Image (cartoon, rainbow, N blue to C red; front, side, top):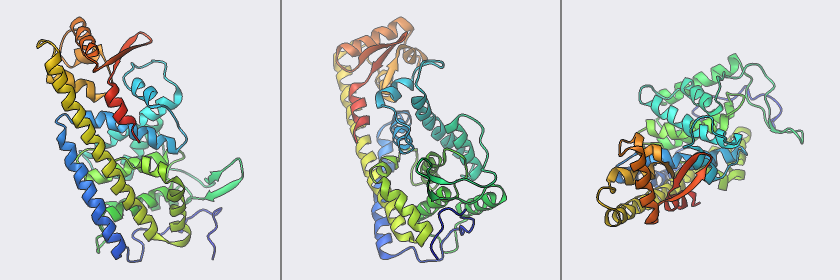
Length: 364
């Protein structure tokens, strides 16, 4: 019988699906994805100050993940806004994208003390939307083009039905099945299930993509949250949504699993190369500052500080206890004079950008 997209999918079965998902094709793809992911994990240790990766890279993921939901801002707006004080004039879309990084960091911090759960994802969603959220209640939620009157999918009804689906998903995350699947295959299954349940009124897509990162950290496949699948999804957006629907409507699991494994592999390789570029630039900048700046100005801490965020300001140097305010201004000005930084006035703030780092972060 043909799947009815206008009817609530209350019959969504629990995981795992009753089929063999470890075909030769899938297992071969798993090997490549794991190899790329392991390289990425090791690359995170190439940069001693982990804040450089945790602060800078998530902004790019925040931008890409939000773009999938048609929340668009530029990299320059985003990186500047990330260091402006509370109350600064920031456009609504940029504020919304910034909250993605905040929500990811919240989930990452929570994961240090508690296992991944639906309750944790609710807190992540609250960070994204900047207000308290509840799981959906009642019925009537439909996904599609409202202006055209086209329904693409109707998730399970809210209330008790939705909570049952979420509890079963939580059980699957915490208690692997008897014939335990590879964790990357499980990632594909769990991501599908979460998106299909659609537990919140808003923010499901972004919450689901943050979940992917947190799951890989919890599984020990990453140490820090630096794998960002959103750019791959943007590049293959039609395939992403088509394959999700094919699982729902036709139970075609293998193409979906292969898609997610390809996303992990390609994104791991891309992020690995980006980290190597950041490390190279950090080393080149360190050498330039050591040889071109007076000894009383150069310090390892100062160089690392201008990599933690693509934009820096005088107060950051003061807060890092590198120097007092006037001296900090002189330090940043000296770094501008040798071509490492570039200053501009934004309101009352004088910001110093790291153009070479921005170039790396903006690369596709």
